[in-house]
Amino acid sequence: MYVNLRALRLLILLNDGMYHSVNSLAKYFGCSLASIYFLVIQLQKYNVDVVNIDGYGIRLNKPIVWLDAELITRYISIESEKLELRLFDIIVSTNNYLLSQLKRNALIKDSTSVAVAEFQTNGRGREGRVWRCGFGNGLLFSICWRFEKGVSNLSGLSLVVGIAILRVLRSYAIQNINIKWPNDILCNFHKLAGILIEIRGEVCGPSYAIIGIGINFNLSKSIIPLINQRATDLSSVTGDLINRNQVLGRLLSELYNVLDEFAYYGFSSFKKEWISYHSYEGCEVDLIFPNGLAITGIVDGVTDDGAICLLTLEGKKSFNIGNIAIRSRIH
Ligand code: BTN
Image (cartoon, rainbow, N blue to C red):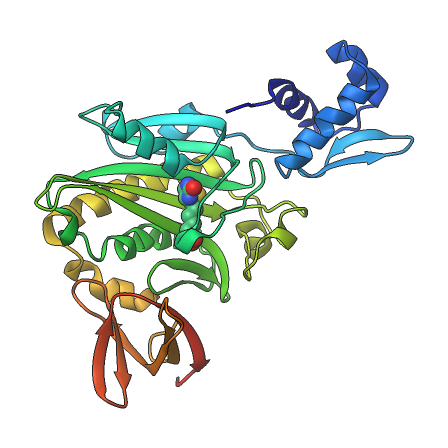
């Protein structure tokens, strides 16, 4: 993949938050004024908010606090050899990367591989959607977890991953963060984070889960109109810039522990906690299936393998697929 290293050098330079004249930048890079404008366009393609004000010059709207492997490791509370961290400035998709490494047998055997990126050129969401996040505006990472169990024993996995995210974000005392079945992380009913899990392996095991997580921290102005769902980010919710390195370190530790427990006990031991995070528990909802049909019911928990339970006119039923949409709140 082509990464414009000059554009990244410009980004590092602009990260001081000061105005830089196009002339001084051209002199610094030893190139023409047109080349500087080209680099600015390149940065805008990475959804960096760069402004160019006549008479002042070029400036970054929001300087970036870069991801830093050493800092992330400082916040990891499990033995460091258990995780192998690969950090990228720009990548197509961290899920794609781990999937291809797995296929090529290029992942380190005795540790859990993690790929993290500042920007994805083709970030993927659930159901074929695109996941958009500007350079340095969020956390974009994937973890490859090896299960001894077969593919069919992993139901409930995505709900458990949601628990790890909730535990960490709630430790920052952020109000109103909840989960929407199966694994959308919402704040005030706006999407804050998403989980994309892709499973590979054998029916009887072992199997591998590539768990991709995207969390919005500080979305750039240019990206918000491109996101085709109601989205939010941590800085709008808290009014603060939360330390991405710290959140990632803590989240990797939490994920490690939660996945380890899930591998032994399955979802049932997490069920009660998960229900306490579900924003639609007790609400009347439509469950919309991929074929467009829908069923209406009142949400009544989840099963031991993470299927949603609805009280319908025909009694209590559970479902493994579909998207829920609220009709009304009962309580
Ligand atoms: C969703 O649609 O809710 C899931 C979004 C998952 C996005 C993350 S970002 C890191 C990882 N790499 C991807 O391409 N997707 C996931």
